[in-house]
Image (cartoon, rainbow, N blue to C red; front, top):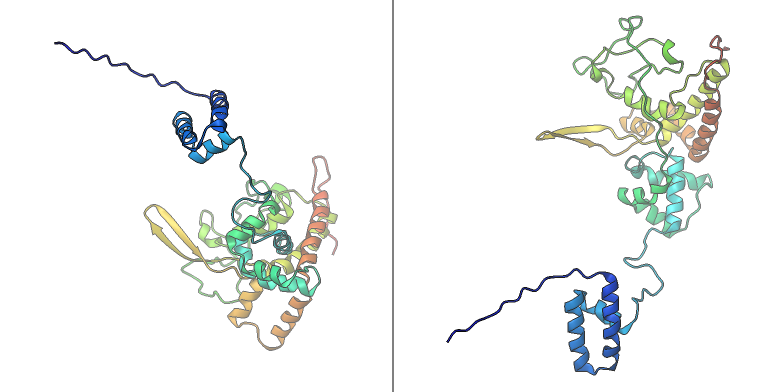
Length: 334
């Protein structure tokens, strides 16, 4: 006796959404008329055919949609519109710096703005704003960020006029990190006509902090335009007189504290953001009458007014930028 077994191969066919909807529509009529046991078998069949989750298949067979209750799905909102509005005001008062620099100074800056009547918030909003993390601040300020200006090449060139007259600070020479010692660099506001450089060519360690400040402060305000008139010179002085107060009193700076190497990757560690004025107080260099004068000046400054006034004066300056065909001969009034 010989037994023959025929093996039939089942070919898998891709099912699209239209086919699934048509199939479920036909099964829905059976499902509504069936009893409990029969409904279970129909449900098992639909799940096997569609590969849907059992709850999704039940909703399809009952022809009902997921109900969300008309509210937001997920965790409840903690930092609402009031906190976001307060954060944007603080951000503007600080010159729209990054959240990592701004974060340690939020509490003091918010208090200063409240004193001048620029910021009004209830106790709960104040607690949430002062307790927000760096990541939370970044999320609150994501729509308030200002695009940085386009980077272009530097216009300053090395020269010999001042190189031999200015002492160059290197890691081996000076050890005077206390207040009173400064690093200076030239910033070109007149195109290719300006010459002079304060550090040695190809030795970037000679000006470790100065070049960074050129971009973060000077170029961020004035851009890379050419200013070649007496009116522009006068307006530059106006912008710098305001920026000097705002940068030194209301813009925290994070300084490099340590570096470590992990394979080919260099990890940099920075200290907590602190304003130049705060660093001056921490150093103990201000005492007696000088400290009183600086404290009085600090308390008299409205950071939000300063920030907005800098924007107004900068707009005036940008309109005075040199254009092709303008005259270049001028002498600043004294």
